[in-house]
Image (cartoon, rainbow, N blue to C red; front, top):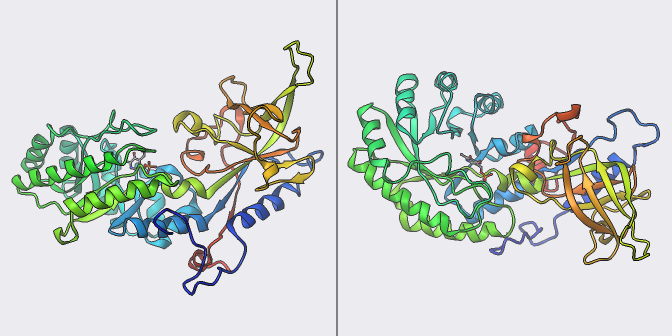
Length: 436
Ligand code: PLP
């Protein structure tokens, strides 16, 4: 990656990297899967929605992280997407893991990851889970209130504690500070109580909100964290680690965030301070790696009632995934996924100009709906394509890896377990995974 976030697909000697591009690999995976389905005779579910995941994208994101935030060790936020192969790729790359529950912790431990590579980053934990992590040797955990400190003193007094502080998350998509984070006028009391209870406070953590867009939020949070480090010293704590949380997007804004964060860290926590730096990125790693394909299962023609006499019928398309499924991101994560045509009229159009929506008033107008009985289950209110779409055709949606399948339900009896076809567009990552 250069400093504008553009990836140069060349090896170290400047020669083009061998093999097909990411788009070609993803396109081939889609083609193989959808061209073999006979919609007239296939078994129920054969035409189900499915993902293509490019693990090479995860690998590239990791290189990009190391280039932009070389001093910060990422602990991937498992809640964002707990896909087994994605986790395996990250474990192989050597990241840590941010877990929020017993199940997530168990998943990571079962992969053979050392407990020291896990942070239980949930300031309000379940008692039995705290006992569980104490048994498993997962020591890193966050807290932000006195009740939690008393809980930890009772159940796991040797835990390594991170004081999670409040941030200004007003520029983010998913605000977290409404629910978590100690205000700066409460940190003194919390540190005094931790000292009184004989607890081991080792660091400070924060989260600027998921899908953050204001880099200054990172600067302010680092300044606040620095202030708490000094305050902790007055209570006899020599804090060792700063956890800068998540909130990073995978688009060009990553570099804009990273430069502000990097400079703030260099100013307030320079290398010679001896403070370790960690982060909890989720969306950053998972979002762009997953592309979703949906089948058009029904179509309803909406006649033109404008009285203008034109031939402007529009269509309601019903696809086999929706807001109760992988498009849960529309509600919970405030996303606006954009449909493209994967296959129409017997032709696979992935990554061609014909796959894209038209602009202005050109083309045929569609609204796109999910498969459940609920009227809220609408993916797109209005989109126009030059192609006429009908039952059996396929749409695809990019950037569907973050906060999608993890919050999908089985409402109306539709499965939330969907096939993932894996490809890997990076030779380096293929070698790491043992793929040939
Ligand atoms: N860490 C914590 C404590 C979180 O609550 C979240 C998301 O909710 C994350 C990390 C991941 O955030 P993101 O996906 O924005 O990087």
